[in-house]
Amino acid sequence: MTRTFFVTGTDTEVGKTAVSCALLRAAAGKGLSTAAIKPVAAGCDDDGRNEDAVALSACMTAELPYQQVNPVALQEAIAPHIAAAREERRLRAGELAGHCRGVMAAGADLVLIEGAGGWRVPLNHRETLADLARELAIPVILVVGMRLGCINHAVLTAEAVARDGLPLAGWVANQPGTPMACHAENLDTLRERLPAPLLGELPRLDPWDADEASKFLDIQELIRG
Image (tube, rainbow, N blue to C red; front, side, top):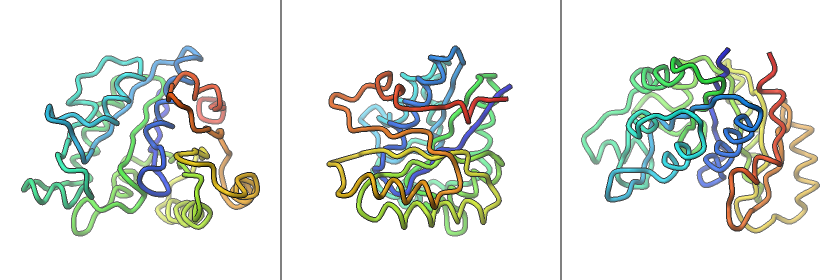
């Protein structure tokens, strides 16, 4: 049975890819096959590859071509709808969903679909990445960047996910930078206010290692039948 989740964040640069990679390695550690897709990425190297998509490829068990892991690779590291317009391309939730379904059909036990930025990042003048998750009708994993403002961002995102009719399967507290003041108190408040289980707290690791990070996660809520 394939379990598929959409990974979103409270903002950009909160560690969605780091958490996704850790989730993939945690699942592999339990003997599960894994696959991931970043349907749209903005910011690529000279070879047209995005570092987040490359990282996902390295951490999943499925062997997929880069173009399947990241079907829409936009050159500039700016808002996806703006990057697409500057390349005279148009992003559509339906087309992105088709790419995602191709990975979902590959038969991995766990499939992660990683968004870009936060829940309401625009795709075009009327659609956002939330419309992609809605079209796929899959549960959501929220990555909370533990920094000043995270409570407001996390609660608003959880409310938006619920309004869009999707379940919040769980959330991960990630430390993307210097530890915030009153970390424990903020974490307690998030536990009280987010309507989903805390899957784990990821500390800032230097150097970063997905296998080491996976040890801080409990994915039983995600993989149970």
